[in-house]
Length: 87
Image 1 (tube, helix red, strand yellow):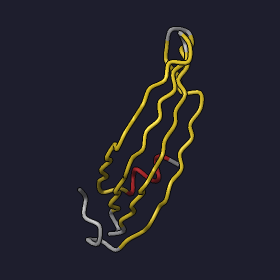
Image 2 (cartoon, rainbow, N blue to C red):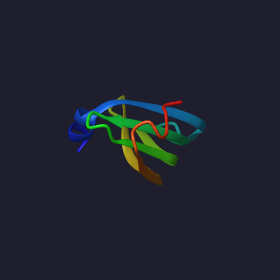
Image 3 (cartoon, rainbow, N blue to C red):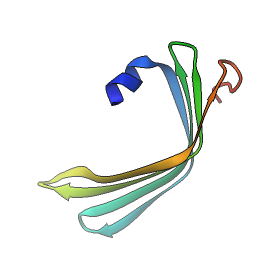
Image 4 (cartoon, helix red, strand yellow):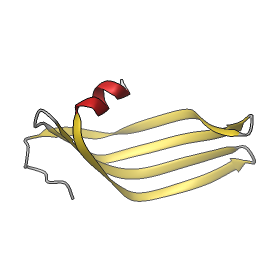
């Protein structure tokens, strides 16, 4: 899925409104953020995700940090090119 989306992007901009890290134990960390995304596609389409909430849980496994859970949700709106400029 990522290759098809990122391959069709001309550019994107993210704005982190607020973010928080919570240390659950010595090997588990949760990251949460409220964000806004503006994505401009090569075909001229523009997508705005605002608000967009993200939550990731990281676990240290074999001395490497791995993402073990991802949750994202928000409002996604397709707009005409130029209607919502990248800020």
